[in-house]
Image 1 (cartoon, one colour):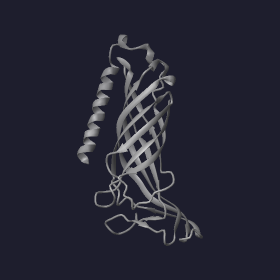
Image 2 (cartoon, rainbow, N blue to C red; image 1 turned 45 degrees about the vertical axis):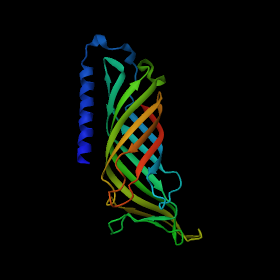
Image 3 (spheres, rainbow, N blue to C red; image 1 turned 90 degrees about the vertical axis):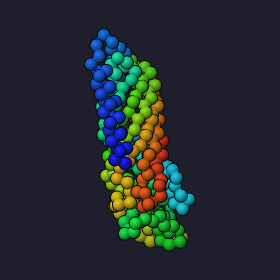
Image 4 (cartoon, rainbow, N blue to C red; image 1 turned 60 degrees about the vertical axis):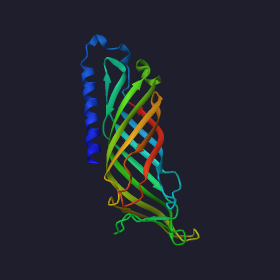
Length: 242
């Protein structure tokens, strides 16, 4: 994992260096078409998340979702305003919902339990939520940089993240027949079973301020030997601007 993180950081530095070299190119090579571009400094993403490689014994339901926010610096290639490199920090959150399942996030054992509790008391709503501090790097291409708000845009890249929080949350305890027992909320926090770092690849395509995005985590959610080797695959909508 350390070698992977080092490689990603090195790629970021190389991309930044090339962007800086282009920025000092002679002014006569700069296309005036780059005037008025928004640079897409601020990104908000809302997506649907699926755990790939999820075993059949884990029962998910509802709408598993992702919400991300990034503040990115955009470095245009002055000799070719169609291209730019962007990087910056952000927060990424995932919420995975379960059906009549107990997730032993605070268990004292070495393996994370996903227990079927359909035949006993269980929570009507139950989820595992994670939050990461992430640093994405994008290589961007605009087909019409002179009219950025109407231009078709493509971006590919990667992001490295560190785990900030992981918790399970249950609402409304009910019996096996679905009758309410206690309408209270349970929340338990622990990062012990989860990988502390996450490396993902990503891509976007859209027009103006709106684009579709997809991301896939190369590293699994849980530590090897501590839980199923599931990896989040997310698709959704990005709103960009500024």
